[in-house]
Amino acid sequence: MPIKVLATEVVSKIAAGEVVERPASAVKELIENSLDAGATQIAVEAQGGGVELIKVSDNGAGIPASELELAFHRYATSKIDDLSDLEKISSLGFRGEALPSIAAVAEVEILTQTPSETIGSYLHLRKGEVVGKESRARPQGTTITVRRLFRYFPARLKFLKSVNTENSHIAHLVSQYALAFPEVKFSLVLDKRPSLRTTGNGDLREVVGEIYGSEVAQRMLKVERKDGLAEVGGLTSPPSLARSNRNYLSFFVNRRWVRSPLLARATEEAYRGLLMDGQHPVTVIDISLPAQELDVNIHPAKAQIKFCHEQAVFGSVQKAIEEALARTPIASSKTVPFSVSSGQWQSPRMIMDNEPAFVVAQLPTMELPVLRVLGQLANTYITAEGPDGLYLIDQHAAHERILYDRISAQWAQKEVEVQGLLQPITIELSPREKETMRASKEFLAEFGFTIEHFGNRSYVIRAVPALMARANIIEIISALLDNLASKESPNPWEEKIAQSLACHGAIRAGQQLSNEEMRELIKQLEQTKQPRACPHGRPTMIHLSSHQLEKEFGRIS
Ligand code: ADP
Ligand code: MG
Image (cartoon, rainbow, N blue to C red; front, side):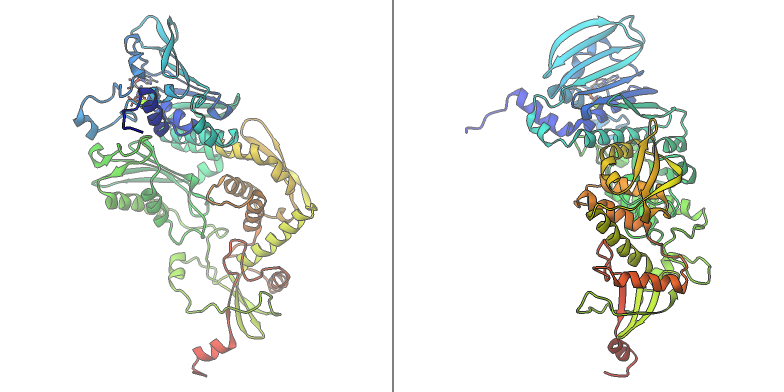
């Protein structure tokens, strides 16, 4: 084919594909416009995962009738004037691409009124072309309705996930903006069901409560630190309140929601040694920096940014979180990963730094020999003697293996033992968790959970798998929903459920066990199919053979 300049329609669809990757991206652009317009109330509604309908209403400044059509032209913006403005952007939008991009791949209606006009204006566009235009009254603000998203863009439609997945993306997105702007009143309705509502009273802890539940909100620690470069503020969880994936890390830079591996690493660095492997904190952090310190213009959807002084920002965030953590004593024995047997808590980091000089010996068979329990080390490891040397068994990993095998076996035989709860437990889910719950209630039922919807985002748990009856049910459910929503793990859902149940039902490190309990644990471990590894593939034990012992002590060379 000869080289030619592409037709405008093709160009705008290509550009639209960059800005509007999925329905949630359109919601993001519309919310940002409302915030830029100074709205204090933003109502979002979506149907059919956002493909059928997205509607965003605000009480912001509105668009004057004379500029309304212009707003849908590519690179038309009221937010920057010239090149110098690009270096100090304070609005969320600036590229003038969102409205034309959305209009290029959907059917759009807009009704808007500014405070100085006596009547508002209405515009209807299809495939980017104006098909209707009139004057119509409404209170000050703007309502944009997007219908049949990607209808004219079937390639993109094909790649969208289920309605549930798209809904959960939208729920997550609106939650993020609600966290970034506690002074704005947000509401979200998904498929006619209320999903989120904040008061807009400016209290971040209250918004966290709306999204993650009041228990999380109460326990979050205040982050507050200012240095020569940045001001870091927000809330972060104590080590005893961890989640099993990174979805609970929210970062805002000058109140722009960003996905930043750098900030995630800075946060995790602050928690180093305080959380078990695979655990992550709940963090909501806003970083205020002079606009010249960052470049927001490196990503079409503005989801990534570049800091001029990356290392310094990293340090500011890490220190801010470390200070927040240092202000609270580590008190909970339940989830602190390591303890010393004297009953005194010691910095877990110190213990981890003393790596034992043991070597994991590979045994030819998977089976375990008969073991004699010697005692418990640091309330975490069982020491035992076998025919060929010493065994150090990780009590949590071992119990996890036992539970995992039992749960899988019961499920495979469709004979899940169920335990009804005398006191049903009510659980409050985040908007995103609720979408996962709706999509996976049947799977959970197969594993023995009886869960009923109880209005808005509350669910009542009436029965659980008998093996879980003594564990912390609320924690298990939230870990389960995390794991089911996670795209990092490609495992089938039954595997994910069995893994989460085993992990959260198992005894913890730091829990003192009687000799009887230790013997029972080892006996059960001997009967599992894979006694030497937990379901995540980590070893359950370290074996020091008689031969190694003799070598280490110089008895043989
Ligand atoms: P950008 O946000 O990058 O300027 P958009 O295409 O998103 O570009 O919007 C174009 C223009 O339309 C904005 O600059 C703004 O003037 C106006 N606009 C869009 N949405 C709203 C809204 N909800 N309220 C007021 N003005 C709006
Ligand atoms: Mg915009």
